[in-house]
Structure formats: C-alpha cells, structure tokens
Length: 258
Ligand code: URA
Image (cartoon, rainbow, N blue to C red; front, side, top):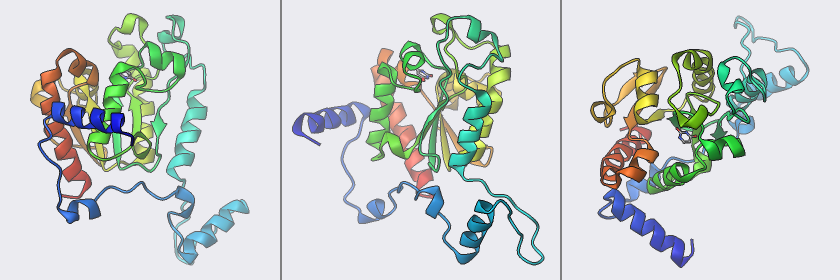
C-alpha cells in the first residue's frame, strides 16, 4: 500500500466511524483466511481415493457407505453459470436493453458473501457485479474489515440490468432468485450481507424497512444473514456509513465464530 492509498484507507475508516485499530493479537489469529483451493481442501487418503475414482469416471463408495458425489463449490458455480447461459431469456429483461448476464464473482469458498439488488450500467457493461461507484465503496467496506474483494463472493438477486435501474419486478425475481439460492448453496458462506432494502426484503420475504432490519442476524439457508444499507444509499447519505460500520463489526464477530 503506498502513501496515497494509506491516506485514503484511513480517511475512509474515519468516515466509517473506526476509532482505532486493535492490538489484540487474538483478532489477527482469528482473521478470516481465504479458504484453500477446493482441490486441496480435503487431502485425506479417502478424499484422494475418491478424487481418483471420480477422475476415472466412477466413485465407488467405501464398504457400507452410501454413494455420495461431492462437487466442489467452484464446480457447482461453473455448472450453474453454464446452466444460466451467457444470453438468458427466462425473463423479459433480455428484451429491455440488458447487454449480458452478470453472474457473480469472487472466492467460491468464501466465508462471506454480499448480495445486492441487480446490475447497474457499469456492471452490465463489464459483466461483473459492483464495479461502479457503489461497487468501489463496497470494496472499501470489505477492506475496512481487513479482507480483500477476492476473499469474498459478490452476487445480486437479479442477474440482468433492469432498464433505468428500476427495481426488479416480481416476475423477474421469481425467475432469477433460484439461481442466487443455488449460488448460496454451492458457496455455503458463514455470513451473507444483504445490501439494501430490496435485497434484504426479497431474501427475508418481509416488508420491514431496512432501517429496522439492519444490524440484526437472521438464519438463512444455513448461513447467518445480516442486512445493511446499500453502498449506493451511503453515497447519498454519508452519515449512514457509521451504521454500516457497526454492521460490519457484527459480521466480523460472526466470521470469527463469536
Ligand atoms: N447495485 C447493486 O445492487 N448491484 C450491483 O451489482 C451494482 C449496483
């Protein structure tokens, strides 16, 4: 990190309400490490035997064991990406000006996943979620808890850009949301952060305002879900960054198993 980056990092941390850094060595020990690549995640002799059997095209169960085909998170995501296809036509958004499907990006073995609403213009152009101004702020939020974008997984409820960034409509959510569920089920993150009113209300099937949902922990598909304000809202309302920082401290505790 050069001097300018350090100044920017510290300025942003102050805006978030960070009042100091922890010298407690236990926090560093508990830091969330990027998970090892899936191929070496399980290196027991049994796992290696299963790998070779799978490579040979057959997975023989151990004596008395049921046949189980285990797929890595990365494989599951790639299969899903192929299933959706680069030019999905399942909902009307493909006729309304979207240029490509924005699938999701990050570490398939992430312990932390962010779920936004839908791609905007920059995301539609680049095919990657959260790369515009709101995305740059999200990157800073991730870095504020000492993680990198590559450590986490980022996706949206809706994979195609709605025209003029309008809210996704119920038929679009109905078609697309199952793909998000499959992403979550493949990644199995410990914590999901739902970004903004739309993502939080859609996932939790509630009309409660985001101001009442944020900062709470919900059980969700085997993960802990924490709603917080959307980075685009923070761009319009910088004082709300303090609330997001509180939420991210909670996320950090959940990641550390507290
Ligand atoms: N807003 C979102 O909700 N998702 C994106 O990918 C970009 C902006």
